[in-house]
Length: 627
Image: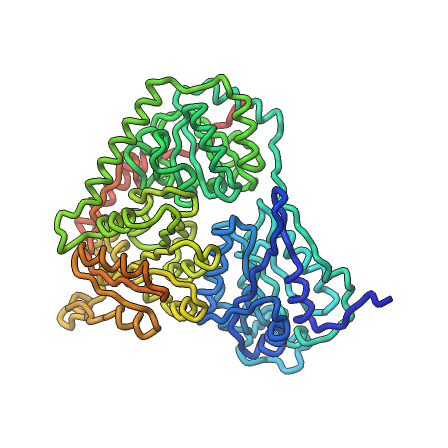
């Protein structure tokens, strides 16, 4: 009886990957949707040949290596990390082009498998085209750059190594706690080598995704802390959604009366209209969320990594006796802020806490205060959404028009610039997948490939991508892929003549927006202070195959949204707006950006004084929790 199968390393890799499945709560699905790839001499003869002859494992052609990893990460996020893509490239620039997006996937805890080509393992033709030469070693390639941003990294120098390496890749990719980018470097020559692989390697393999439970002693201590709390609050992050804990969260909040604030990744965990949902928190937070945080005595963090924006650079919680309880699957996050750590699945831990807190509820006066803040905020949003000048809308008003237009299941997507902050504050999210922001890395260029990944994950939803002109210029190429594959997205492209977000930050730091506008060089002062550049990004989008509208004013913008919804082709709505941001921060909404201690600029000197005042409000959150 045959117990082995002769395949090349590349063929065996694809054969293995297409037989990997995951199971959570009894629902089983293939883990890989397919493979994105751009072929070069480092993978065309190996992985390329294997994909060509594996018609049941779909190959998707893309235009940019970074973009395809963004697409895979966005897809995985939409699928709650239960499904993703493989991404393959050639050696050299094809491989290193993936590094930026690979870092983003790891930072955001999203599974993506990278298969970059590598140098010849046999070293017969060294140095190869595009090979890095290092004088201290012949065992280093550009793929070693992936090591610090990969949750698992390996290089296959012999076919015998493949079996154990593939199993390790899957272990990490399917881990709720350790997932992120996994890199498996495949040398040119090894990809094409044949070997008798054991048939067991290619059998259907199901990876069970566990819902781990916390230590019982720590759970009881957490219950006591909550019962003794007078002003508790709950911070919901992306882990709430990945755990599919939205319904349990709602029941927990209604039972206990504990208010909720949202991180970027956690926005939508609770319907925006819930009376105990205070919305965004921190540097881009709402007034009520930041006011409640200031005096909170117990903070329950669910699935959050406590990024600096949402903690207002660790100035949000001013109560000197504040205590943290963290619910998280990852040890690196569960211990943050010297918290009482409840290591495990968010949904299951919330269920356990609900049972043990059935007689607990916050005071009515506290709940009434929270509801009053919520009502006040809705008035603020209504005002921000209402155009003062219908012919010259500002950014917040475009957001409002879109928010009022979309259906409940539709999705808004963004990643960089001033748009994420305005969206975090203002967007009224009705479901947990309706708000998709990549803000762990806030990577310019994520928007279009991210929109493609989201649409591929759920074609039934309309996907509205918002980005500025500078972000668009980073990576417009995969508009072509959306058209090629028939995954329509609607892109609202906001032209504000440059890097408006950083321009605003620069001005706030006394630096007058230096280097942030798209202008000609003024030869009289050798600065970029001339007239604005005559860039027409609408023409660029049209040349890539998109349907393009150029509305003038709010009424035409609304008409363009209606037309775009009827289209089957990717559509770009190109609008112009004022460069300066219009929405101020609220309460404790500081974001730490260091200012020079000495400067000849009076503006910088003033900004430094303000910075030093804000630094006084910063806290360490290292006080030990008594357990």
